[in-house]
Amino acid sequence: MSEQRTKPQEGFAEVEFNSEPFLTDFKKIYADMHNSGCPFAHSSSGDHYAVGSHSKIMEILKQYDVWKAKYGPGLNYLESPGVLVSVDPPEHTFEVRIVSSSFSREVFDAMAPDMEAFVNEQIDKVYEQGEADLHDLISIQLPLFVIFRLLGFDRYDEDGTDRFDWVREGIIASVGLMLVPPEEAAAMIDSGNIEKVRMQALSRTSELFSKQLAEAKAKLDSGEWQGEENLVTRFLTTPGPDGSFLSDDKILGFMGFLLTAGSATTTIMISNIIYRLLTEEGAWDKVFNNRELIPLAIEETLRLDAPVHGLFRTNDEEVELGGVKVEKDTKVMLLWAAGNLDPEIFDDPMKFDLDRDLAKVRRHLAFGYGTHFCRGAPLARLEGDVVLRIIFERLKNLRLNGEVEMEKRMPVLQGIRKLPVAWDV
Image 1 (cartoon, rainbow, N blue to C red):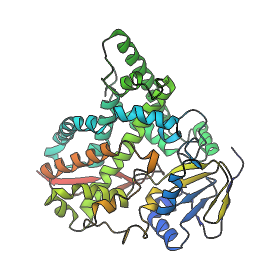
Image 2 (image 1 turned 45 degrees about the horizontal axis):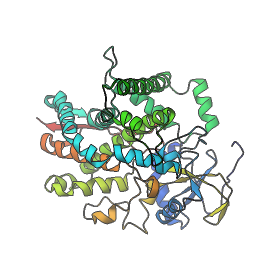
Image 3 (image 1 turned 180 degrees about the vertical axis):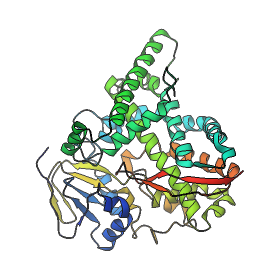
Image 4 (image 1 turned 60 degrees about the horizontal axis):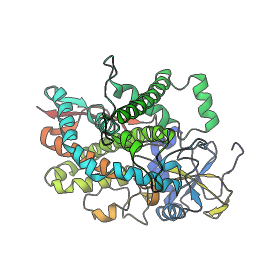
């Protein structure tokens, strides 16, 4: 689908979502879109439109027969079979049923003690030093620990290499290409502009998935595993509504999707929460002194600093968007982060406010909405809760300790790359 489908439109903001101006000042761009009365945007380089209105995003997400996920959540038109965010009902319904039985709140809650132990172990490593990069120490490490545990991956290679390191590099490479036009992405890979180490990490991660699938099959066949050991064995042994099972390609796709979506976004969420509480006047003390505010602190950060700018849908028929005719099979980005800043939905939307009503804050779109609502939302919230409670107890007088660096290697995400902090020992 290489022909140009979109063009600049009167009233639409012209935005290049991979550009430095956007990555540096996206909230002002979103505010300007809302203030203009036409919260729509166009990208010439990406050949797509974007929607920033909360109500319009909700409207689109309810039109399942028109707005499809079939071509994937990124800018590229996905041709191979995807999973969850890349498929529509009834295929999506089948996959959700399998995931729901394996990705339940009961499974998540049972992991809480292990999460707590892991976070405490991470803090123990550096506690006496009185300082650390909290993003690297906890925000990156905990979500990878959780997803590795769910999928049944060992953390270390046979030679002792920490898989967290190279898996993270592969995630950065794959997510970093989501908003890059397909032809440009291919050229970047061919020319070596995607760092060699990250392409190697992607290859190694793919090999890890294949190895895990083969091992799960072998252990199920031998009777060593009974089907409840990890998500991979559950995928292999859980039938859909019609009695059929996920194909190998689908299971491999789920591994890639869960590893990426379940770690990259939660990593950013955790650091965003800590940063907000440390930089908003009085916020840290307010939550420290009233732990019942932890859920609100998490939700308000998700609203104001949504980890994902947005994902794409593709229209299955010609439609009108903001008064503009949009031809069939056009990529349109639904900007969760902009919808969360819509003044028609949230009073003073740019303000971090711990006096908001929790139920109203949860109208945010950080986890999407409708049939494709993020199934891992309870897990992300649980991880945030675990981290905050332990940090409150252990890291006294926590404070920033140097320059905070923003993450710009993955333009579809918004968050922090380095979060240096110090505490009293």
